[in-house]
Image (cartoon, rainbow, N blue to C red; front, side, top):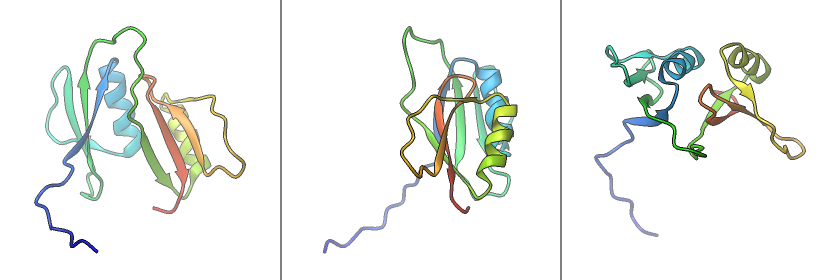
Length: 124
């Protein structure tokens, strides 16, 4: 068994390129309860977990290339899936037509920019 070497690196932020920057910043801040780490610019903001437990989420404004869909998605864990899905829908998320397997523990949604994310029924 190989011995794992301790590294001095960690993920500092997950970055999402946004085409509707202001809507995305408002949506993800409200969805996660995050706050800007410092004042953002017209096309960049780092959202941070005020409790210090979660990773940073950075949003960067971009122009939309024709036919593009982001392949990045977030899995959000909650032990109150139905209530959280309803809350996220009220913030501007949309249900995505997904073929769910029997017993699926997740719901697939789209954020205001059309990026997919999953709300997973799992204790946090």
